[in-house]
Image 1 (tube, rainbow, N blue to C red):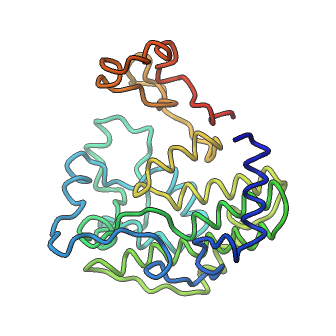
Image 2 (cartoon, rainbow, N blue to C red):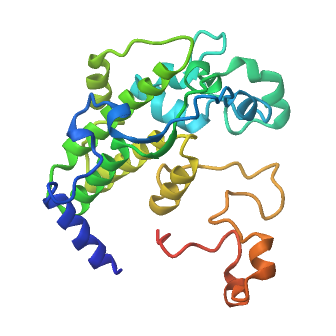
Length: 283
């Protein structure tokens, strides 16, 4: 389908919610993820968690850009259910510029992902799609093409994301911070989040907040959105890297089962590199 065709189909759906109902939480900020989102409940016999998966490889540290640049400046109410201070007085993520030696020796000074919400929570659902994601999509469509209230859709999406992560926290065992609705209003009015500025600035806020909502639980979606939009604007260290691996890949190369057995592989072999863009990656 062409870009114009896609735009027309999206416009048709957004203009007729009766014929094309969306998983948007009824456009209500304080929605119920359990009743609205498409989530896959773990088996009742499942007793495992993400503890080993995240801690054995040192993947449990709070991410630099997300915490230090996106969430903390806005005093985001999601912080206490996303991260743990790790015994420190304040939330702070380890700088991405740290060497492996620094990371090893100074790790205790920095925040980690929250235990109740993630590390020990064996009731974490599989995620198919959530209302915040849908409302971020609506906000982008309205901002780019008109036909609706982009600001309302964006603010609903951000607010729903807060309720969504507090819902995940409620499923775990341990610390359960209380959500104050007034904190969401403060978040929406903060300089880095408020829906103000040029269209480019507004779209940047939509895309950055959508990326933040996906987080590591929907890492593939977050990576895809980053490649599609080029937001947030991330800077990657260029020192201490292997040759030809100074930045994250634009795409993943085909696995050996494809290169070895797919008779059409030679047709795309020249494009099978980590720096070749996928067709929708046009920015």
